[in-house]
Image 1: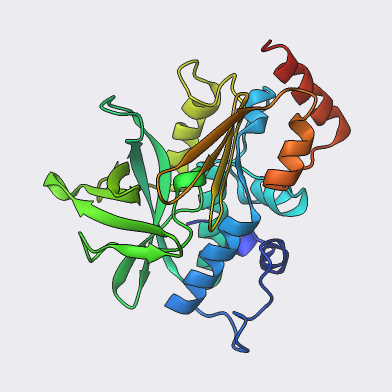
Image 2: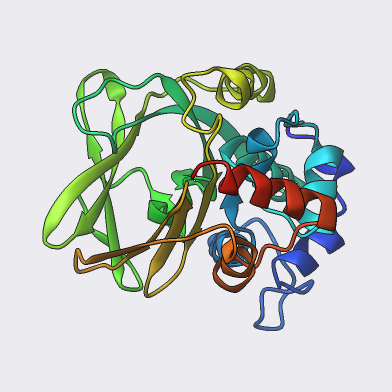
Length: 279
């Protein structure tokens, strides 16, 4: 389903910093240890970004296009690209992978459309939420779905899954002593073709949060980073938030230093021009 046979698995593992084994001398196999290793390595290595949308370029979701961009070109991507790439890799490794569509809940009481793509991976009969495409607030590791209400520590960050009516599951993040909803999703399975439709909205609709706006995130261990428009934000587990403005003259340096992103000269110049036009 996820075209895992088309993926250059060795190149992907090199991109995320994993060799052909999980780091303990054994080969990667479809078990929980491998799932954790791949998920953590992916989120550490590949930033969340939607720069192609800002530059007015189409976002392709076929595996080879995603591989060329996120693996070979050293770029990042947003949820459809990130989780499609992860799904292809996990499928290639022998995992059972299915998709879900999620509704963002980080914007207060506003009812948002289903535009976020996540994965459910089943290991030894237990379902795990896998999501490498939610940006700086997203999980670094898989989250068990069969244990609603149980707090799960991922380094200095704590998550849990809450269950609502009709089988709706909600991923929550603990910050500053307060649980905050991140997104909600139903048991309905989504397929790659569904993500093509959602991607069409997110990459081109005027109400999309990515259209006309620079968005780059990275979910670090001790601190989470985000650059949205001109605002650079540092997010801490204890609830602290630090913000500052990023001008056009330092934009490329911030993308490189904070997110590991280096664009070709022409793209970089166009990005700076767009950033300067916001003055």
